[in-house]
Amino acid sequence: MEFDEYRKHDAVGLAGLVAAGEVKATELLELAIERAEAVNPRINAVVRPMHALARERAKTSLSGPFAGVPFLIKDLSQDYAGLPTGSGSRSLADFPMPDHAEVVRRWLDAGLVVFGKTNTPEFGAKGITEPEVNGPTRNPWDTGHTPGGSSGGSAAAVAAGVVPVAGGNDGGGSIRIPAACCGLFGLKPGRGLVPSGPVYAEMLHGAAGHGVLSRSVRDTAAMLDVIAGPDPSGPYLPALPDAPFAELARRDPGRLRIGYATASPIGTDVSPDAIAAVEDAVELLRSLGHDVEEAKTGVDERQLARDFLNMWFASVAAEVDFVRRLTGCGEDKFELDTRIMAAVGRATSAPSYVGAHNRWNQHAHRLAQFHETYDLLLTPTLAHPPARIGQLATPVWMETASRLLLAVRGAGLLAKTDLVDRIADENLRWTPYTQLANITGRPAMSVPTYWTPSGLPLGVQFVAGLGGEGLLLALATQLESARPWFDRAPDL
Image 1 (cartoon, rainbow, N blue to C red):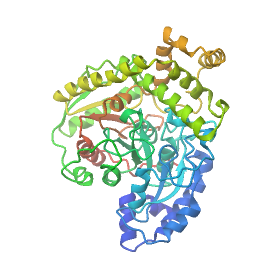
Image 2: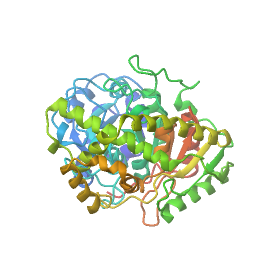
Image 3: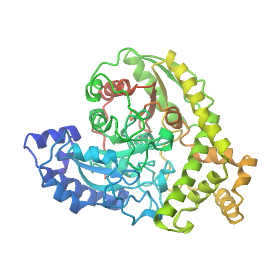
């Protein structure tokens, strides 16, 4: 098999070829490694090659629905026993993890051949992938632009044809954002459906979860069948659907009621391209027989953004403190942005934090009321097309203020000023739509139905009610058939 033939297949298709004896796992692995070595100098997607481990595994007798298919995992919360999980940080670059993450174990049990780990911003804390320790990952559609984050390395590798599907996770949009940037399909499962253990009972109070980025809807559906379901040591017994997700993805979604919105929920500007992407999707949906109208969620999304950042900063503080205890490293091992987020998190009072967390239920209640009328919410995934590398770096004013606050241990002053709102605007103005699904625990997806006039992908987002993964997959399959994207590939 040559690369052009390799790229014509999704992961389900490659697994079928291996099962039929038409190609060997070792052959697929060498094709994937060869492609990675050819494009990685330009896109910097894979930061920890695992070629020797993968070559030994590919020679063994593999079983499972994805037996023999090459695969990449994200270098954040997807631990592979005996190797570091670098998390985009100097602090963890050389600290091996003792056990597989449960999601990684399930991928291995499915027969996948993991041959590398992909780039991520430090602790996944940004919607771009430009960590100091590894350098920026670049978008295969235009290497001057970001692939998004925090699963940007995985998205870039899939878009570049290294693998048809790769591991990601999503705590504020980190699967959907890079999917939108790279012309991929990205589904964030609902809270508790995919386990986070053994290190975490649940990540970010359940706002974060594991999934994949793919070029085909059926790959994502089949992958969800592999990784979804209870973990005996986990906090939930998730409700599973009456049929496999792969089957649900093939069902007719029926005539759906879809409410759409394009305005930024935090009041920041939205590009004409993002609005055009939604308007294009509305026309496509209506042509498929769905009822689509402009609507409001009723959620106080400005407050939701504050509550999200409250949790985010406190979680970064806890992560930094945990890593320092684990490794004995100093503050200098963390990026400036991480240190200031941690400082703000430490300055947050316990009552304030608990109050913000309690409001998550209010936001979920409002969104549930919206879903009493509408099956799905449609929004842009991003407020702007993929940014240029370095464009979303911390502004000089914020960096200067951060250094001063750290020097005088004055992060607590932020709580008495409007700087937190300004930080929210700076951090979320490019991605203000995605946190809603994380905070409320709803499943959501980004679908690559639109490219800008300059040739950059710009996906649209759909948010479903609880247990709506099957509905999202069914609609995605319908959209994929009506507006195929699988064969659209960047010229690398």
